[in-house]
Length: 250
Image (cartoon, rainbow, N blue to C red; front, top):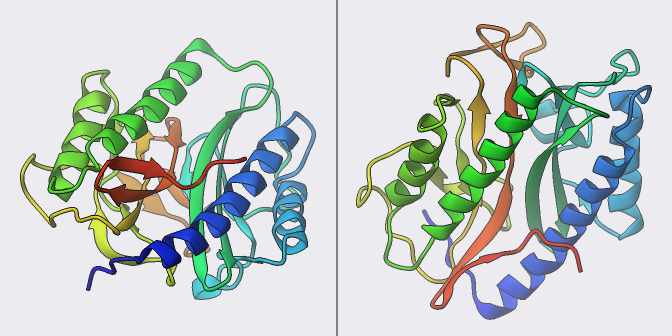
């Protein structure tokens, strides 16, 4: 069932989303050659807990860390490790959630590590822009398919592919709520968007095929062809005046 938030609930969500956005910014500032993904995860956890919040991902379904940190051909759900040392030219997707005062915020960004290739930068740019194309369609009385079609159209026009196996989602008192928000679809189809709905829109875009595989740890998702993948995400609220991005820093 889709949850419609009251003004009071949206105010609480804004606080959780702000903390999540600030933790993501702190992670991005730490992305440099020579740092481990484990160290970045500690930065995320420490920041969130200092705000009196809890990392949404820690222990969620058994996930062992506070952030998903996915490097290069890892699409999502990369497990931070002391042995994974970032190097010049990597692209590093960090996905962060914060739980505060009964509500979750959820966001992700793919950061360049030092100087990256023109091809990698083009992928990051296209993925980030596809997120904002999707957000533009998150208007009251539109449908979920309008969001997915906007993302898919933008991505595929640039010869990239959108991941089918994993999608965006509602977010609120629970980290994952209805409705599902695919990054592909047909305009005018799917759940109708109503004021008070809060959803995480999160394009996962691959340089090559959209097909992926899950590694033996049951978490890490890689591109099937080994090519690069990027991931950007915002939690947004549907309002009578248009979509509002909640995962922003003050």
